[in-house]
Image (cartoon, rainbow, N blue to C red; front, top):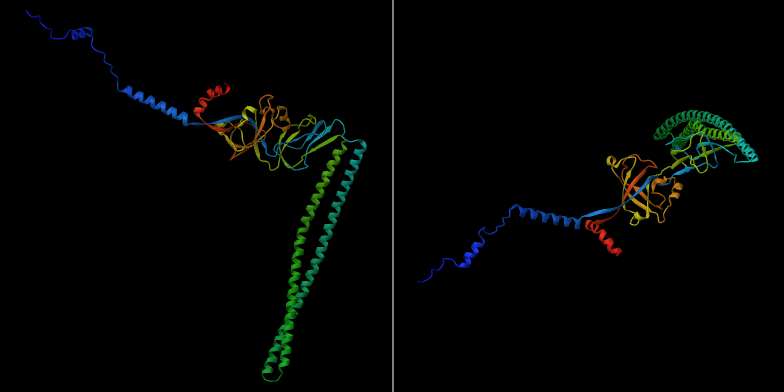
Length: 416
């Protein structure tokens, strides 16, 4: 009897016996593919942004607003006490105008020199007073002479008008006589020579009439000039007397100040605007202390930045600058555009800032600083004044973001 053969192979039966739980099937949701694609796109975009994107490297420095012609510090020639202050902040002054009067601790001149100065001032006062009197007498004399000349001209004009009237009568008579002679000549009662003589006589009378007219026009022109001179004479005399009176008043003030024997007058060295008054009456001052600061006339405001050497390496003239004034928050007023004009080649020590009439706090500590001169551009963000402190960003260069990202590694490579 033959053995029955199984329907399935033993290997297949054994394989099914080991896999009674079934096969493993991985089911991936469709959204995972979109997420993967999105992550890849974001990574590529970030890589492109880092490779193509740029940023501007900038150097930050502190500074102050100053006039382009500088600030003039008014200092006394000797130590003393402020007796009088004749100026206020923001006041426009002229060259030579008295700003302060000081009482000196010690007189500047010896008694002999003081006596000589007083004598010179007295002589100047007398001379100015005599000049004023002489000017008044001269103006009166000139006015009298003009009045006389005007009266004479009016008399001459009246005489010429009278002569012109008589001349017109003679002309009419000569014309009538010539007409009769021409009529008689036509009737052959007179000769042509007689008629021609009458014509020549008429021409002579007409020439004389024209001469009188020219003479009258000349006299009228001279009269107009005299009238203009007579009208201008009081103005000229008043201007001259006004100048003499001002000089005399100044001489009187100088004499009064000199008679005090220990007074020192501080004057404006040039026209300008007083920006800051630092001394008040009763305050003791010395040659090392400023009484006031003066902004020269016609000055334009600019900024001076003070940066340490670590921030100055790539600063060049022409680079753009953004200024932020402490007095005007940039969040509200914005930033002031500017441009670098000049960069100092040597540093300024913090001790030298005092000689520039600038706040020593414009730079950090006692570290040597470089000065950067900056010109303002466009309309100012607000009303600026000399001495305002500010912070500035100097735009140095544009760099790629990937360079900024790997800058620490590049620096480490350079050190190795």
